[in-house]
Image (cartoon, rainbow, N blue to C red; front, top):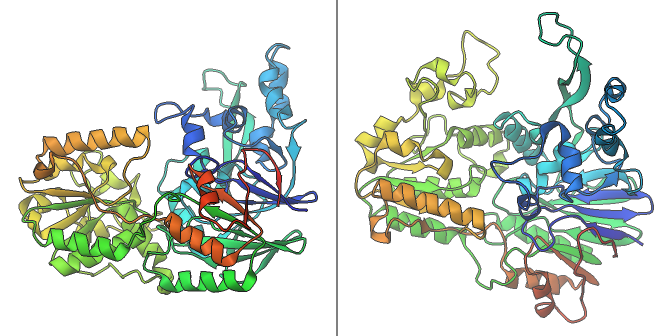
Length: 528
């Protein structure tokens, strides 16, 4: 009988790490960062130690202690034999614990990780998985992972696609302070084993037969999975909603659920206690109506990977005769995903309704040399192979702070909290309005962010009629509890496992009494 063990996503939003085992073989559904579990120990000012990150996170129960699933270079880097003799007997445990931390622990023959989408609460820690283990995901998610790595800090936990294997080496230069001493180095980039999935085309991972299907979520490329093992079908939802713009994907999902009739459903419950159905079209209507009445600058925050919200604001700009000014990261995402025409993203090269914002950087002079360390801030190329003709599209055509300052009523500008320094240069006039088109804060860190936002808005007299509080206009990336319950009751599986929720017990009151609701505990195996 198949065994399910959840190592994240239990009594928390995100952090999904769901292991399904049959005999000695296993597959993971997602391998993400748990904000709650990680936040117990770390924040922006305290992080795991770079060269000890795997052991640190295992020791704190942020990651599962499972043999044979992690990168060998993080457990036993090449050259370790040179290091251990340098430690006295008392100090050797510091390294031997890394080598032995898996000795008496759970082991599985991992046949693959099935990654539902590119949000970090589902994808972050695939960076630590053995580089030869297949990561199965959609072609779109694969491309987004590459963009995430290219546009993020060059650190180990951002090695989603290309890995630099760690090893112990000696300092050979006689000009160094300590020639012959040991140092941890990183090798040349190695490509991770990522397998691109095609919707409804099954793949075999060991004894598991897995069929992916597109689902509508707040990031493109999201998938759910049907896994067949031992004559049973297990459905994993990932994150999904039924109120976005891809009704065709939702309809096909319902048809496949009805046809396949999974025996076990592992389903997210982010909004399990909410009955109201969100609607992205309502977001479009509401923001359009408000912006059409505003005389000054319109500022909107939303996640740079949320292309659905981009399309909504793109339509708002067209409806109101304004220009949508977006970040260079979002522009890069739209440009790269343009190779998938079925996603419906516009070609923004010569679109009068969309411009890219050019920040001042380094010397603050709008000099091309200011952007050599962030090439996509200057254009659409992340790697300037032709030094004589680098891409400077945004330098030539982008919108700058003084453009917005001189004609604020012309623009809708996309600024998130970490971009608010731009308000100093833009110096928006009285009458400027700010919309936060993302989720309201639901934890202490989110509440702190809101306080900072209010401080910025007050300093520049933005949202004066709201006492400088953000105006929230948003549609969630997750289905409501009523919608989730209706889906499950239509399928009538034997068992339901709620994940990605603060209130798993709420499923029991919403589902048919003949459906067994299993409330898993972190790290505790259950038969499914």
